Image (cartoon, rainbow over all chains, first blue to last red; front, side, top):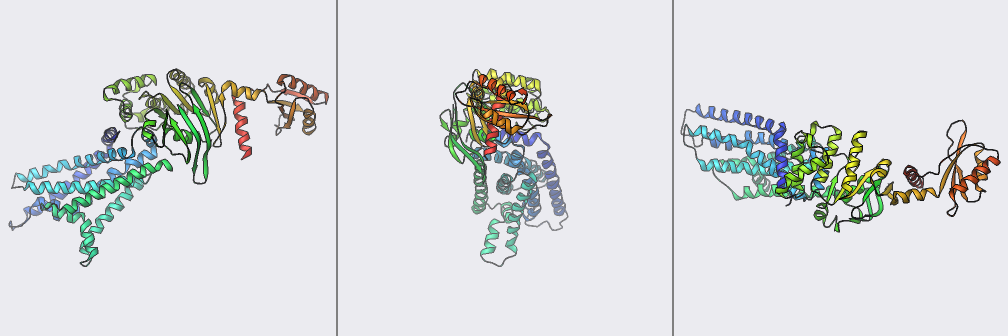
Length: 249
Length: 318
């Protein structure tokens, strides 16, 4: 894994000295803030306080479709430049002629976008802190919710990294990633479309919305973890092969 | 240091490099010479491990670039053709990254970066973002990158491309200096560059190695063979006159250049002929035949001529 740390640090530096990460961070927090604000306003207007769920569960769970929509924008934008930009500018030649393995390059870049993703979510912890001033917060569900978000991010970002390795154009990488990630999301909606049977089970299994719905209630289903993990691992493995294949182009 | 054996690289149906074999010994400074599109960059990319050869093999310091790729790459400093760099990084940040990537030990990195900055004469822009640098500076930052791990072998793809004449002189001086402690293979399509810095040259044209040797050998090879005489008169008749001169193997008129009817006759001499005497006899024969001799080309000895000749022969064959 020689070179992993160097690639990771360079990638972090490039992400945060250019406007991209900051712009995404601002857009992301604006969207999340708006969603959270609407949910809190909704709950404060409820006459009946005997509801079963609170704003935290709503934010991460029942209303997670908004949250996932922002991820469909943010994740592809975070990953689009990882390989596409290196190939367009030619820096990939300097990178791959250094004594590093393709896997170290892929994982270094992936770890950097994943770290950035986590950094983007970190400020949303303040929402929970704000809520805590007015009522009890179940930290267990908060933890499982963030765990669910991490899983989805890990899978989406790996998929996006793979898409970025398929094109020299950032725009095409962006579109491919949105297409793949949105496709996955839409497949999840199939859970409510198909009759009970194989297709419905399949759709339910890959549904990111259902994953968040469960995790926001504190249910961590191992199948969800395995799905996210294997999607990420498979994408990164293929990316490694793609990078290696450029030698034979 | 480099052993290339029957390298071939094709892109689909296009063969970029064909059966190229050569070796570069430790301590040599070798020029890799050829017109644009001859296969220089492809060959260097194979040596640097960026491209895989379709067939053939390369070893760097005894390590096979395909099978022991990391070990081979750890022993060479490579400067790619267009000097690609990350515009958002500062020069020092970039070199620190490259040093880490090339496994320079953490505590030696700072010194290694400082040394590379100094060698490539870019210390004054160490804190400048690369995107703000001029082409000349970027080229030298890429050179510093090749130097940062202090590898025994340097492979430089057109290190002086895009530089102004003063910078070219600087870089050549640097390469000569580096040549005392490193093995260097550099590509160029500029002949004086080879004469200025290299001990030996490899000449490539249309994907094939067409000549190889020290500069003296390449020139000598040319000297014994050809001469050019500019005459005024009937080309076909004078060709025949020249062919009868002792020591001349063949004579042919080049395409006439429209300079008041001057025809250039190219003279191939027999291997055992004495060049100067043969030229004297040829001129005497032409004058006797009534031709106006306007110029006698110096027996061409410049590398330029060797190069033109070798690469032209290839072109007409294809």
